[in-house]
Image (tube, rainbow, N blue to C red; front, side, top):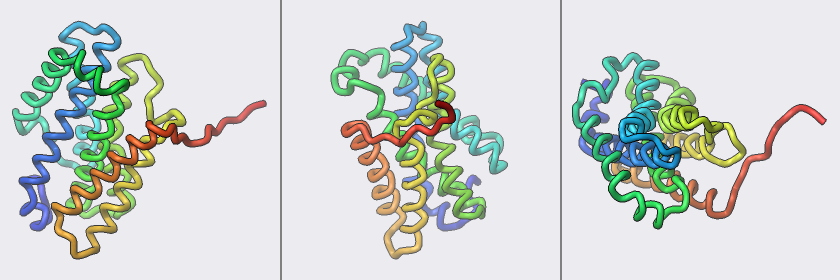
Length: 214
């Protein structure tokens, strides 16, 4: 049983759907990045895998949820493979509808943020730690993806990314104090992060660079 809180157990279905969906969109993101770097099909699948489950794996290890979630459910491997196949088969159409990978990153960021925060809450961790766990869960797969593609990870540049995950985590915890249903909280929080990420790219919202030197 993955959940320590009975409330979380009751919402397992919607929680699992969000996890699957986040895995799928991050797998597509990783596969597209691999194809942009002209990886072979094996490399495409591997990058889809590490992008989709990298953050979740570290999150699960840190909270003692082992074996990690994706290793206990073969559906994750199938979903990641499906995401890679969709990306390879539909790349021209996906590129047409999005000039960069931000759309799939935005979806994964929003979905995995609330998954990480909720798992932290289920483990009885402090709210601040839960927010950090949600951010790690959402962003670390992208860090691995960018490193393997020989790029500076997106979260270390001036572009607004991980900070949106922190905002989403704060809002998720705040809404949990209200009378809203968990399903509504899931939708509101994930949608907010996704929309803010899209707006940040669309209007080029950036954080100031901080450096020492002349």
